[in-house]
Image (cartoon, rainbow, N blue to C red; front, side, top):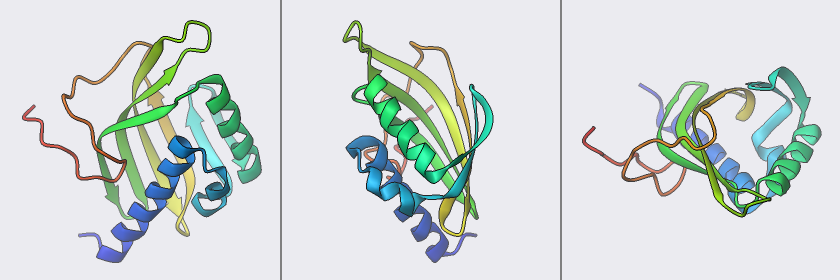
Length: 145
């Protein structure tokens, strides 16, 4: 059983991380990401500095306006967190909405993101959940699936 303090710290971390991505509050990255951040995604495995990742986030938000991570389920366990989500954004050329269903898990060290694994399905995919969480750390809705 996780201690209340551990879960509270993870909730606060991911509430800030949501603000980075959804509100563009890039100044919060220093409070969320360790000095180096190990990423495992479709681009491969790499380690980026915190400052380099701020630039990547800014570039991603410019290339994919209205980026949102719609969260359907999540869990926190010790120094780990995972989210089942759909990435949404507006296509720059067509102005059409785009989606990619996926999972992302994180390893936390000293209260900051240290490592992540991201798996995304093809463009146009989405989870069939009827209801999403209000925020990344909200209680997941009961869907009856």
